[in-house]
Image (cartoon, rainbow, N blue to C red; front, side, top):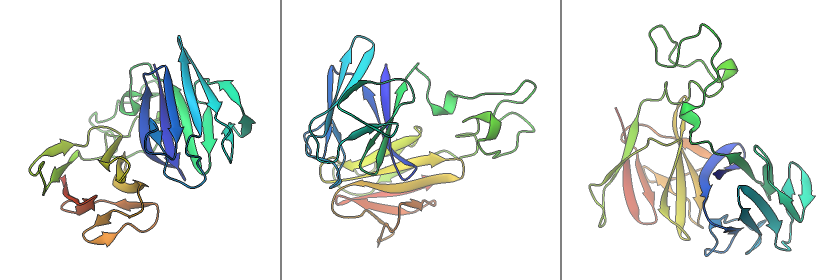
Length: 222
């Protein structure tokens, strides 16, 4: 099973599992993967799954599709290939059933994350992603208004997307130093405590109120 990790300027904004024979990518809202950016064509590219193989084909887009810096028309994707569309980078990962929090490269004799004596945050270093999740206090978002008021969603994944696709979408990414909010899609910026998101990301603090597509959500962290 393959998946795509979409990032902008080094910030992961969404993850998409490839489960269909054809997965379309483009700016139009009916695509399977929507990237709301003028550098992306309405129907930019398509991913085709043939058995265990995944091919990407450029659909005569205006700005082209690049893999590892090289323009392509159609190419078989390999594990860790980086597809570049405009300013967006999309990493293709052959998913073996583990997620980032479970993927770790431990040196002989080192303690697993969270074991007694382990520093609360040791950075990535030689431990790969071993500390990603162990140093971040679990958090959740609580819906404050609308039909889903009172609903609480735990932020257990590395990336959680919130909002209404095609209208306004944001992502909440779990990092070793805490959680950050990024604008993904839509003409309007999401707000945090009434202030529009400025820059690429905003660090979230306990009690922050996020407003997105008319829905208010409170960030809760113990």
